[in-house]
Amino acid sequence: MTYANGRIIHDADSHTMETGDWLAPYLDPSLVESLGSLYGDATTGQRILSVIEQARARKNDAAADAEARENIIAGTKGWGGYGAFDTEERVRALDALGFESQLVFPTFGLGLVRRAKDEDTLYKAAHALNCAQAAFCAADPRLIYIAFIPLDNPDRAMDLLDKAIEQGAGAVLLPSNAPAGERSPGHTVHDPFWAKLEAEDIPFTLHIGPGTFMQPKAFHNNGRERAPDLHGGGENLRFGDYPCLGYAPQMFITALVYDGVFDRFPALRGAVVECGAGWVPEFLRQLDGGLRSFGKTDPYLQAMKLKPSDYVRRAMKFTPFPSEDVGRMIRDAGAELFLFSSDYPHPEGTKDPIGRFEATMEGIDEESKDAFYRRNYEALMNIPAAAEAIAAE
Image (cartoon, rainbow, N blue to C red; front, side, top):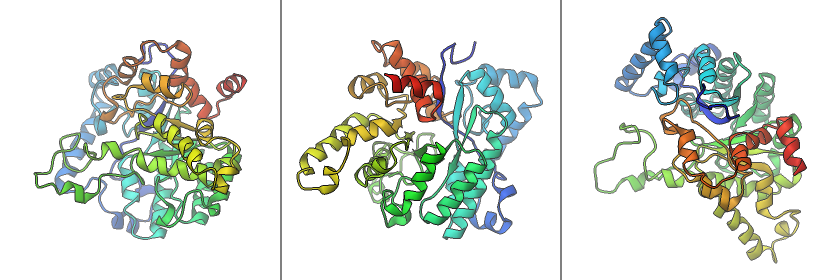
């Protein structure tokens, strides 16, 4: 029996754990050097390399391999997770998990790309990362390759999108901030990009990391010793960052609504992944409250064909954290908005995400649960059976 235990489940958030040579086959050596070490300082690097070597040795140890698959979701995570960086293992991991498909996002490779000090390096590094992710996902159609595309330069973003489409990208990952720090993502200069996504039937995603807000460094200066992060180290998410994760996606989506992108491209679809979703019901109310407050004087609001919240309901999906009350979200905002995700092999996904979500869904009917685990994902990815069923309702 698989972890899914017979239920049809799609996983809207999984990751690769990139190794030190992840980008090297696709990037000029001088640029690899300029971007620096994937793992940070030498001490951290040695620890990670040790974990990677242990994971590689597992392939030649039948007992260790069997044990890892037996504890696929509750066992080792990070670089030591089963299939974290090895494609053959990842295919077997999916067999054990029982998920119909997984969206596959990068992890530290994305941070490496964002270190680029100039635009040329940024786009070359992004393309290299996309090539590496496409290669990882090529082994099995259940692994859905997500291409990273910065919108800073609209022409280069279009070029990167064309290459990603040729590589078979199932969705694209966009930074959640203002492109180049100088314009809205709803600016008309980006219309060819949104039009291409719509025409090619490819959704966009926003994800924790590129462009999401963290607590400003000044707020860390509190007169006390710096606290450890979630994993006991020093460089990742902390409590002060956690409540801020939804802010940038809200601003991005508000721009797409207000600037008319969802009007101009009615078939455009997207998802906010690993930024929590407890904020979503109130965000929808705030969007409609803004229309009531400003609609009498704002010609752009007056020109909208739908309520602001209806654009979001039509276009967007959201992944809750396993620590959130998804049952309450469904009762408050509706069953059509939320997606299951495991965050595999990141430890934030917990040792039992299905169990954690199920614990909050007492009284939620089976149809709504099926939407959470399966049908909303299929609508996002426009898998025909689900899209037709939802359209018929």
